[in-house]
Image (cartoon, rainbow, N blue to C red; front, side):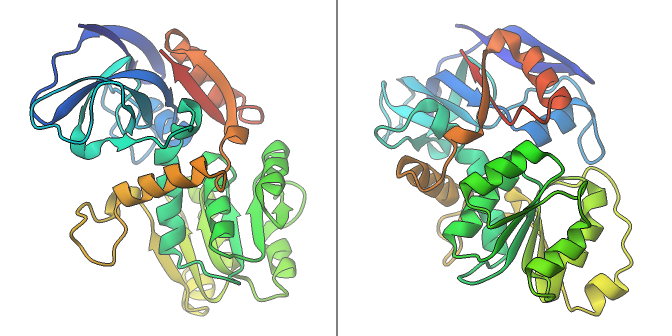
Length: 327
């Protein structure tokens, strides 16, 4: 069967190519994609071969795919044709997905909302690793998709106050709408001083760095209070320069790396949330209206315009957050 998929042919070059999709093998399903969500930070970093990315092409991006099961291979027990599913498959009109890696989408949840399941799970594990609890003061640096989702999860965990930090005013307006108690724009005020003021001079209990900008990490450390926790949720695309004595050593900070792949993969491990657990929970919270994602959608484009989607994400950051590709 012929299908279409997005390919990064070389640095900065996005194309849509035809390819052949085979029949599902044992344990796998053939899924016809309805839509897929672009992960703006990670995918554009890979596209532009930024530091801490492979820099090898071609690449086939995407890990937030929603579609309908068209066929199942042998030994598939829990899915059947017609089921509405989410998976970490790429930007492709048809995908082959292992039964173990697919999730059933709750009844009544739209494809476009369901497509946030994976980015939401990434944000959620960062909040979990920060041990956010009722009454924690939390700063989320960066209000892109992951930062906005992390901010909402912090609110659901009982954080107060929640301080959203970003240089883009439109994102901060959205942060306030979705639950931030305070917003801070570093282009207008000294962000560290403002965080100190808003936390009565103590600094934040938890700082979640969600920009991926290595230059933001020193400020994140300085925003944290004594014995605070700093969660590196955005993947840093370069080197950070930090004098560890004052911002870390003297304050007794805990710095937590929160790459999603560090989560345990096996459900048999006790007392640990797996990636699949977090994806399932994200879908349930979105379906119940507790996690808001409709407000994060900026554009819906046919897959044939994928090159335009990535260009807009990189060039019009003040206007563009979530971009969905339709098939």
